[in-house]
Length: 290
Image (cartoon, rainbow, N blue to C red):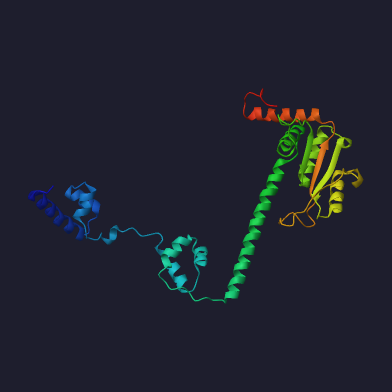
């Protein structure tokens, strides 16, 4: 819709006055109050093309940082060095100095690689220290286990790693297999808590035939506090030459299988305790559980 000549004339008159006030050093707010124009868009159009007076410009807090960053870049500093020196983000450094030429390298490619490798090694050492600190703090927070805590831990551990009974295959037996000696130690401590003597255990090693079988048998026997001859017959897994295995070397000791003789009643207690944990977390009907 076309504007009427009167409205156009009024706007031009207001613009002349606004420009005059702007050139006289008025701020946008002062012009608004003087002309009684409270529409922000109209006010901006009235002074369009006229720069604000210097006294209205707020000093930018980062101007000094920007200037210092440019000086350092001209001296040959890298982005990382400038960032560390000024305590600002790397993206800000890039924005401030990207128009400047790249500094000449101060070292050979070999020296650069050495510095990078040294920096990477320091970073990895720092991260490893952080990992160890976190683990040690978490371990210390556990403290001494009560009998109840150990019992519940063992039930959950068996549920995850032990043999389970199935509706289609009745196997109410306590059998546990694992390659981690710490897991085996916790499992044995749990059996001790349940008064399951070592004379009720049938233990045997399961390992690849290409490994050091004798050394593995000795290792697990020592962990159990038994003579090697007390172990059951070792189960040897045939080596497939087309398979690339990573569980090799002196640290590979296979798995230890632990079976509790006459363990049907113990298995039922374990399963019942597990469902008790589930019920405590998520109450529901337990009647359909085997």
